[in-house]
Amino acid sequence: MATKQTQASTPMVILAFAIVYIVWGSTYLFIQRAIHGFPPFLLGALRFALAAFIMLGWSFLRKEKIFIWSQVKHALVSGLMLLFIGNGIVIWVEQYLPSALVAILLSSAPLWFVMLDKPKWKDNFGSKATLLGLAVGFIGVIILFYKNLIKSFSAQGSLLEIGAMALLVIGSAAWAGGSLYSKYYSKGTATVNSAWQMAAASAAFSLCSFIRGEPFNFDWSGIPADAWMSLAYLVLFGSIAGFSAYVWLLEVRPATQVSTYAYVNPVVAVLLGIFFASESITFIQILGLAVILTSVLMINLAKFKRAE
Image 1 (cartoon, rainbow, N blue to C red):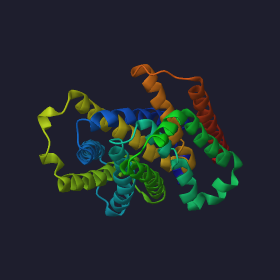
Image 2 (tube, helix red, strand yellow; image 1 turned 135 degrees about the vertical axis):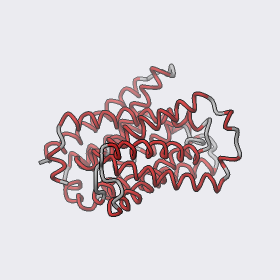
Image 3 (cartoon, rainbow, N blue to C red; image 1 turned 135 degrees about the horizontal axis):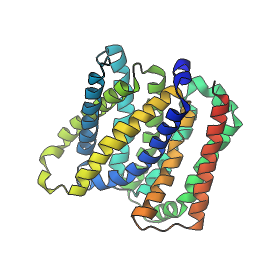
Image 4 (cartoon, rainbow, N blue to C red; image 1 turned 90 degrees about the horizontal axis):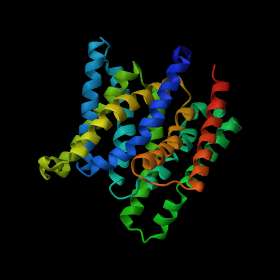
């Protein structure tokens, strides 16, 4: 890991963070659009199958080694944790919960990174700047979406909604665990690792989709163009660009630093709502955005200073 970190140029690290921060922040919007046209498990199966096929083909053309079992088996495990459980839960619950509430619950991911990253416990729990930054970031997300949070809990919520909230907490833990597994056990290039991770997730989504009869019980011709375009965006930008950048960042940067995407993504989601959905922004939301960005700055500065 130390070798990979020293080989990572600063411009490439900045570019990868920009992709993860911005592109993943936009995927909430496109998942909600796609889920209106596709059943949830079928959406996951199509998204990750197409992305895996493209990336494996690209790796083959580059003459990378893609069929080494010692590498593939770790990618399959991390892929199931990251994409099938972690991302699959997001796809499922966005049928029942507003994206703002989803973003709040997913913002617990950086806390899971700290608690589950045992090899880095000494560094993480010994860094006051990192711990303070994580706490400040979580507070910032609550400030940003406090109205949505109050509305969701004040309304008479159904057991389905409560279950969806609990699933998101599990999804955050699974995502953090899968990310750390990928960081410490995955071998080979980030492109090949990402491809096999998505292939594993696609297989799991496909199995669940067929068990539920999704491919046979709805009208394929009735899928709106907006859903197809959203699927294409999720494949090309959310999976191929965003997820590949994320897996690579896990190899070259500390996991707690990479986990700051969970604080920035809601900021991007809010800004997209303002510019593309004619949503307004209040002073308290601006304050929340400022707090979140401050927390990310605190964590990044601490990690860059400690990086060798």
